Length: 343
Image (cartoon, rainbow, N blue to C red; front, side):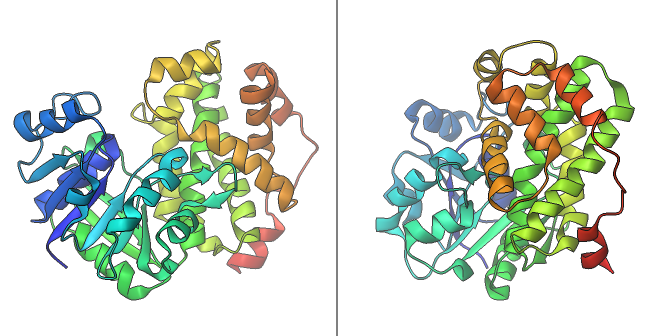
């Protein structure tokens, strides 16, 4: 697949993936609401607010016109924040054609409806989910844009759509792409790992050390898989790039805005102060609220999510939340969901 790709929006991840596409010889039209940002990208070939000191490929052209961005495009890449996904896709609808596929790389839920991003996109564009692929995996924008070796996964209910998305992004130098047909698992893994990253950052901010963080990552993966399997995902997806791969990188890197937000909260900063200080979307905070509701809806135990929900929305002290996790009733590590799904 070759030709033009329309990208929405011009944040750090949208810009980094635009760079991959441009390096692969695609014509990239990057949409933004901000005219000054568009001018900077087109004239200076930079996006300083989100990726400072990184020169961008001259093949990336920014525009504030959605019609211009989508005209003649063979594919649309959507990297809007989860809270804006419905608004953005609704605005795209007049220019969406039968020839386009949709790839999204947003990790979160619509908190009002608890819907996955592919469900929101399919509703607003009035297309089947077979026209949609989701891109996920261990991938920091700051490293991708510098062409550090990165491996991700694209998932679609349609093998044809998945392979078209794979062809768009895959190259032989720094960006490797696998396919997967477990859309539910890939979307849930990408969204839910942000909760555990908040917890890992919170633990580091308190000063609890590597032992505590390793336990949070491991037990976090268990509760992510519990909810995922209950919602129809394949348990093996959580052992792959979208699951354990993305979980590890998001919980252990200072590039991770969810880890940074958790660390600041662990140091005693208020949630509102942290969000103001970050200046970027912290998806894990919204996702914690959605996952808490989904766990109750599906009657799934998610103790880490529950304690983080109390810290973020009920004013619980972070240290007390971790102590509550340590003091839970005795359990057997090998859970029924793992035994039934992986044997």
